[in-house]
Image (cartoon, rainbow, N blue to C red; front, side, top):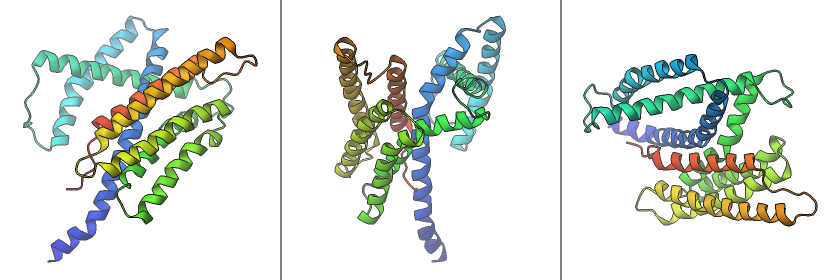
Length: 272
């Protein structure tokens, strides 16, 4: 009886831990494509034989030593129950992911060592952390709002309002210009509401694959419409107003790709 009571008491804590872990997983995935891209750019102008050798050695260690250990620690067993891919395929996939990990490391180093020239603070690490928070905060709070969509009104309403406030306030909080704030707030608000309705509707199944599809749909529609609008402004605008610059447009594209991937691949937050 004491064990049953203890399990009952810890269940809400476990569910909360699962929810926070899932939201963190999704938010980090939304940041990852941009960091990988920045790593590619950071290495494109200084790639030499020493750099290639460093990537190969580091990638090999991660692929053939770290990744197998991590997989077995995750499963808590030495022999995995699922069938393995052919050795060549597993090698290519593991090595490719390891090379991506190296590029992510290079991107972080680039952010820390070479912050933008207009960044006044000497603490470049603070800049790097702030950049991650700016990209990850909206997916994090939005995912928590979706996770709470099936809860009682007193629980789901504050989570939804926090997510909506985060979408609206992240731009002013980090001194974005009006165009950047607008091009973030409009699609992210649509994603928040659409995903919330998806979770509320599909109660008999895990909804987050559907949320991934909803996020992808809104992102595609937004990027197409915004891209066409920017072409019109560029062609016929008389005051030089710009909704998007090309770098900002591609940053948003990579952001939404990461967000969708996070929702699709993150472990479902089910307490066991």
